Length: 51
Image 1 (tube, rainbow, N blue to C red):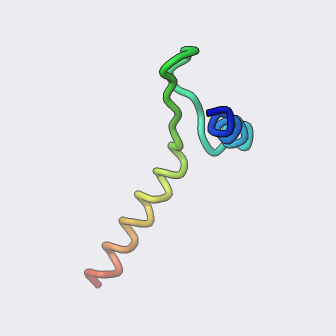
Image 2: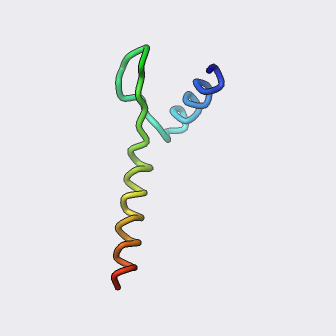
């Protein structure tokens, strides 16, 4: 488990994810910018497929 938390710390420090619960246990992280990019990519693919 320490390796997982180390990876989470690295991703948080790099700005890829952010913790959204504010708790010490049962925390949740989100990668909102990545999800927005994937949504945009999906829209562009859909447009390209219907053209």
